[in-house]
Amino acid sequence: GKRKASALDAALAKFQKVQQQAAQIQIDVADSREKSSAGAKAERLKAMAEAEAAERRERERAAQSNAPREPPRNVPNSILMKQKRVLDLLNTTRANFTVAELHNELGFSCSDPELWDMLIHNPKIQQGVHERRTRMEPTISYKPKHVFEGRREMLELVTKMHDGVLMDDVTDAYTGAVEDCEALIAEGLVLMLTNAETRERVLYPVDEQYECEVDDDMATLFHAVPIPEHDNEFDAALRKAGHEPAPRRAVRPTGHDSDDEGGGRKRARAKKKRKVNFERMKVTNAHLPELFKGLENITALDQHGASSHRAK
Image 1 (spheres, rainbow, N blue to C red):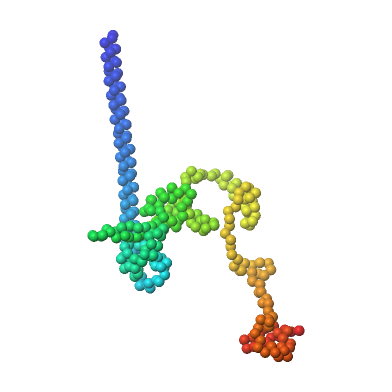
Image 2 (cartoon, rainbow, N blue to C red):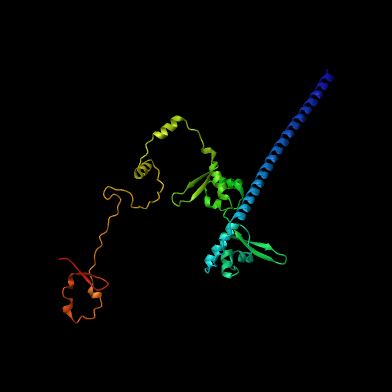
């Protein structure tokens, strides 16, 4: 009886060991599949980014080749205007330029110490070095506020900015960024709002936690709430509910709006005639007082010396 029990125990232990090995093999296979799928996904994302970058470079080359040559411009005399010409060139080409290359492109030298100091300390310009055969030459290039390339990296940047990021700063990153940004907005991947005070466009990420479905009863109740038509009444209703209204942009009157009294026409201002002040005039014949009798009714003198009298 003992021999049979020991044989059964040995067989059971061997079976449990085989089961553990099989389970471990299944776990290893699942891990390898997960790793291979993650690696394939990373490779696909990398290939998409490289294809997008190649397409963008090709688009930039085509734009530069098809762009008409600008006629030669006059060399500016102001150092500030020279700095603007350099900044415009760097922004348009997005390339590194040495002092000699800037001279060839712009027609004036940037080796002036004052001008070069202004350029290297400009927040929109970054420095670099170009290696020649025998020496190292300093270069300058355009410096955007945010450094990234492609639509995917643009979306990642906006997603990180929960408080929003200026659209002008985003579209200043590279050539063609405006089209990529407009595409993200059109696809609903980012939100674009306009600041009521500064009128600047701000990009915000789309947060899925605020997206929810509303039933018809809730929508009916929402639309049933009366909203005041006039701004003053609307602001008063907001304050009554405990909310401070956002500041409104002041609208300058144009004079074309109709009103009850004047129909929108400007009232003509009556031009008040001013008396002639003879005390401030240089009179050369003051020793003849009889010439100035009756001048108390004169209101003005024309360029020929003729006077206009006030009606009594």
